Length: 265
Image (cartoon, rainbow, N blue to C red; front, top):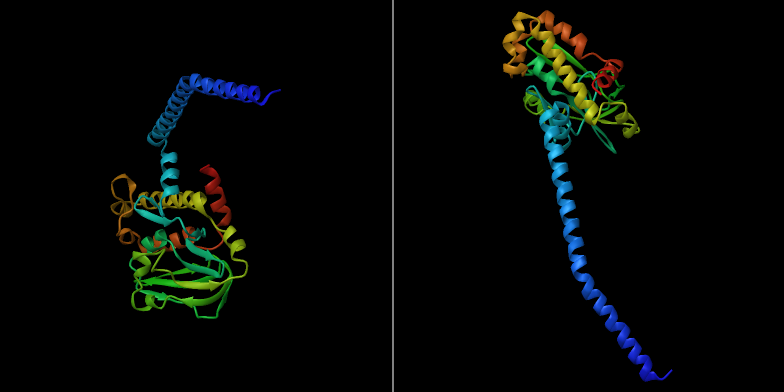
């Protein structure tokens, strides 16, 4: 075939492709418009469903807010979302080298303004569930079980002169000890984390409110709606305190925690 005829065919083919593309542009525009409309409609539907679920479901609101925030607030008490929680209300912030350990807001609120922290000795070996440190106020002591096993590598000496850091910032400046642990990840898996920790904390706050609310001397410590106020400890007499120590802050509550978190699912 002559080169001129080949070039002519190629030109005609190219022109045909251009014409097809030009003819298809309106259809392509319509298709993109429809796709855009569908995507917008899906986004609006998803947003509407989320708003409805947020408004109608208290559990959805709790899970959503807990997932996006650094702490979980419930009835005036809070739990850091970064820590792993022991059912006895101690916590561990685990990293590859060990764990920082402290006590949660519920325990600190029940005891009240801490007057003394008995720190563990550096180098001491402790097993999970064994009393690691003791908080004291007005003749009341709270031995706090260790949430993990390990060796004390550091302790928060600032608590000697300012023990109420435990009340003001229990998950930050109020940390009590640092432990060097074997296999930190495995030890962390034995504790309550994420939504399970939050569900258990909520269960414990409700149980505390119910326990104190059944006693007329404790009703004054509950704000409108059952929120725990800052002076909760004033409503807890010594016999009630002893009962709370056994029921809330003793080691060996793993099965109870498992039952509580299963019941909330």
